[in-house]
Image (cartoon, rainbow, N blue to C red; front, side):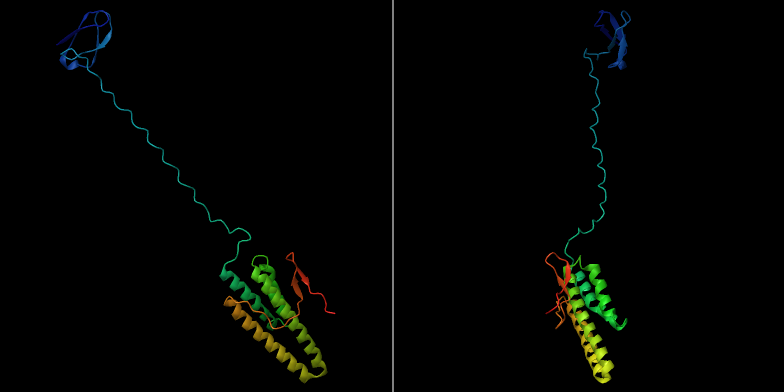
Length: 204
């Protein structure tokens, strides 16, 4: 049995030994106090340590979609080779669509890519100038054939074969990444200093 004085009224409070550290009420004044140890010390109640705050899990970074290449970015070497080769090969449309086919094919490729790839802009103009020149030669040969069939058909065969050979050679060169200059052509399309095209002035 433990007996101790009430700190308020100095009355005697009795408690069992196993009540050490528990609360006990004074019968005289009703004050509630802690039952001391048998040797007179008031036990210190252990205070549970406060849990350390856990860091909040960071939100996963949003997945970013690949951004398209900005306008004006130089085209890759493969793109340049592909489209410059098509500039030359598209002239073969003249052997499928007689007449303006040899001009329409390169013109379509040129218009699609000339603002994106500088080499296509230059190559397309060269191809168009050459094909327009060959078209004029073949048209004149057709007129000659009306006067002299033999001479006319010989000229048509010469210019037709020359045109086909130039297209194939130019296509191989372009596919190898080389620039090809046609041996002769009228400079119908020229590049202005501001980047737009103009027709060549007629020779006097």
